[in-house]
Length: 98
Image (cartoon, rainbow, N blue to C red; front, side):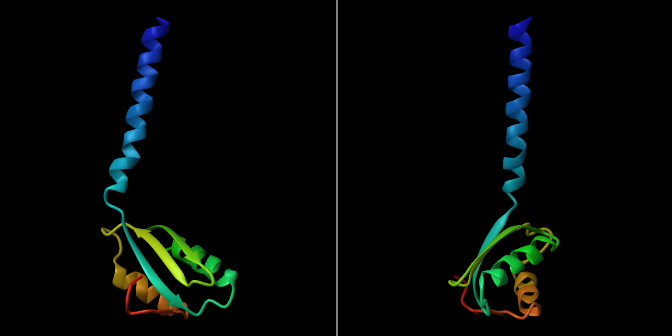
C-alpha cells in the first residue's frame, strides 16, 4: 500500500515539474543597453515597472552597466513594445541590442 501511494505521488510530482518547462518554451529573452540610470534605484524601478507590463515574465537591470535583460512571452508582447515602454519611462535604449 505504501509503495503504491509513493509511486502515485512521485508520478504526480514529476508531471507537475514538467508543466513549467512547456510554458518556458514560449519565452524569449532580449538584452538592451539602456542609458539614463543615475543610481541603482533607476535599475530597480525599471524592473518593477516592467514586471507590471503584460507579457513580461521577468527582467534584470544592472547599474552602472546599463544592461537590461527581459524575458517575455512573444504571444503577448514584442521587442518593439518593450523598447517603447522603456523609452516612455525616460530612458534611452541603444539601437544595438547587447
